[in-house]
Amino acid sequence: MEIFFKPSFIKDFKKLPEEIKNEIRRVCLIIFPSIKDLREFKEFEIKPIKGFKNFYRIKLKEYRIGFKKENSQIIFMRAKHRKDIYRYFP
Image (cartoon, rainbow, N blue to C red; front, side, top):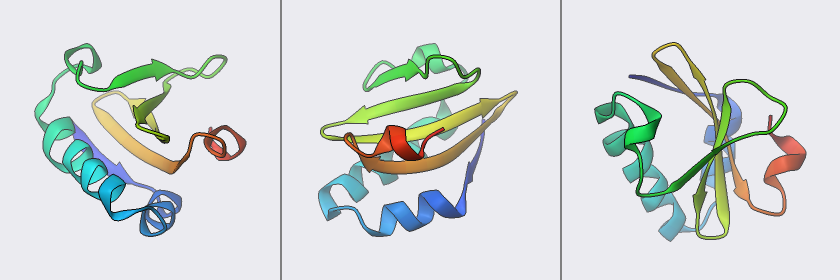
């Protein structure tokens, strides 16, 4: 899978606590590029966003990563606290 990052994701990422940044780096740069299908990714809770086709979220403690899957591409769009993510994503 090809991995892309939106500027909004980079901006959100810079504001996060270091512990969460390390976890996101591991997910986005190590785990995601090596999987072929989202169903293989069991370590974290991935759920589709209701009412939006191809939009998903990953749960990391009290934070959420919002991403879009298009064909063989993953586009990471937002990374926010759980109370804020659904205001800005999708």
